[in-house]
Image 1 (tube, rainbow, N blue to C red):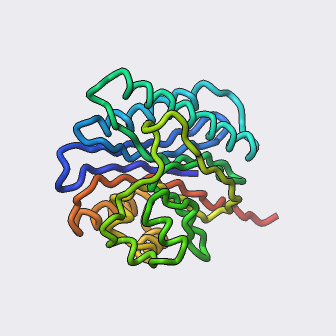
Image 2: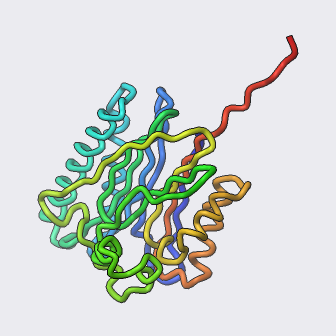
Length: 252
């Protein structure tokens, strides 16, 4: 597996409230995540940075490979802990009142990907045959799409598209969505903030992920396109690629 993390402040906002990372352990497992902080001057960047620090600390504290069930449980428990610490930090620091963050997290190995998410950052799975979104947006507009009151294309331009129904740090308890999918060699995973998906539709993302360019070049092109179309928001992507194994063939 290979991975890349890229983030950009965009063209309008004074600071980057997004964060993210990927990290591979000695068992070959990769954790990858994106957090999109909310709160502006009320420390959205603090919320996303704290989320990164807690996730990486918890990841480094464990010393075993996961089954799919164990991975999902670890994700759920860890995100509960993140929510607890963010909420407490906001309560203890008046300047951080109202801060929060979305999060999408994936644990990847050669056989499966276990994911967890809260908010409207997204995870896509790209296979040689198709691309599909693995997460559901926890937003008002996401609910309208799921109930078929509007289409996904209409959702991109809906006046209330930024109304988020779930976020870390804003309440004492949180509901975390988790799931596991199997993936094969030649597939890739995209984790991204809404700074990307507000500017590129699924067909455009699929086309970029289908290119023969390196995953770093693909990520840079995604961010460049989002900025070319206004760059009003921070943009963050993590791409994890499940490489095909190339075996040498020799004559016997």
